[in-house]
Length: 85
Image 1 (tube, rainbow, N blue to C red):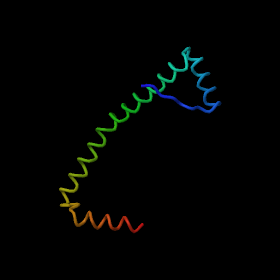
Image 2 (tube, helix red, strand yellow):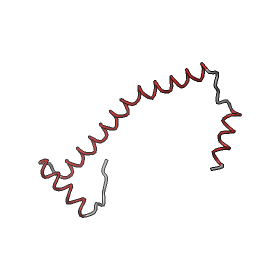
Image 3 (cartoon, rainbow, N blue to C red):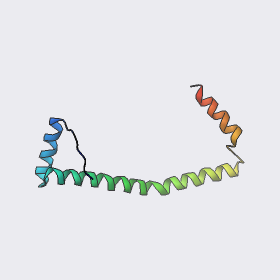
Image 4 (cartoon, helix red, strand yellow):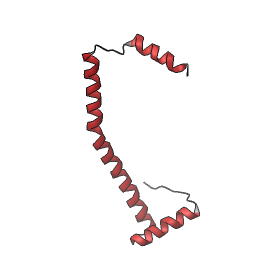
């Protein structure tokens, strides 16, 4: 994929300097930054998934234990309350 960016001069200068210090061409440096950001985002999502699954499981167990339901009448009422604000 090819992407064209219109950078402010000061941003371009900063990126060029970082690329130079890293010993890379600007394109190579930018690609490494984007790839690193994507890996970090994926790792964050993977790390958070068990926590979310556990939270959802606990909420469902709580609802079952206390016989709570968000059936349609309750959900519709909550939606109408939300529109008042």
